[in-house]
Image 1 (cartoon, rainbow, N blue to C red):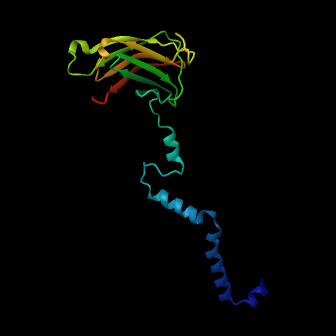
Image 2 (image 1 turned 180 degrees about the vertical axis):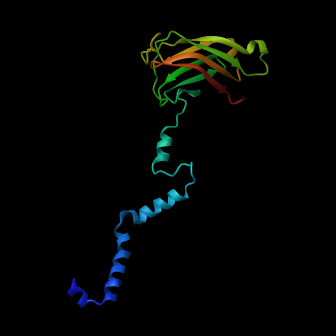
Length: 193
């Protein structure tokens, strides 16, 4: 060390030491340009708000569910399954389809019927006739192999559905994949409604 000090004056050693200290942060991965940008983004995001996460938008788009049969989807639980109601006012019937968490695949039920309490929309319907109960019956299909007691499609017909402008409904109880859902609320709006 003494020889090193004799060859380099004290000022040169101090300068060299200061230069090394300045270079150390450049060796630290936390000081990379990417790390600096991430730190700035974290600091810029207000507390309690979501930050941008690459790929999150695409993932959210995948979770968007659309009615498969052109009806109205109602979520069961936290998206565990869906029930889709379809109204055909010209024919006077309502169908219900039980679907999986993606609302794409049918979920067959062993139940013999689904009870529903309907409240019809429309100024032409007298108040005492707006609310009524119906049991949606299982629909068998040779195409899908569904039978009564093993189907995802249920249907009911009634004169009050003819020319209906929509309805609110309550399914008091429905069991899907060993989970019982109670007081499922449906709001069905037609284009006129």
